[in-house]
Length: 124
Image 1: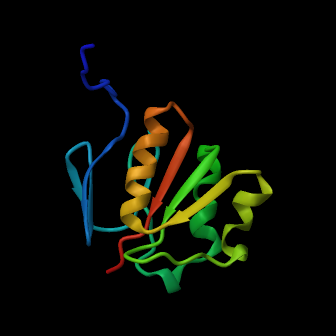
Image 2 (image 1 turned 90 degrees about the vertical axis):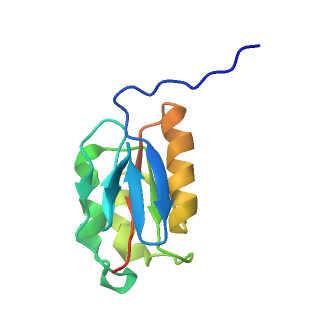
């Protein structure tokens, strides 16, 4: 059996990450981002977990993903349900995990062809 990488073409793929950065298609981002497979990478205007507000998650509504993978920073922290209420009202699932796990999970779901979004919190 011949194994070879599946070319993702123009799809946004996490190609690297560390404590204070994420690389998307080999381009480094050092602040929080919103990531979808087939849309431009968006700066997510939040710099800490405690600064999260409902409007931060509401930014994802226009993209209409089926699931949002929320990378909560270096450690796993769950957002208050009032913060994700705009997503729940539209029946968009949200999975919370630490930042590095969110990067890996996004890549897996994106490769499966799912309409996934990643909200990746990189704390300053």
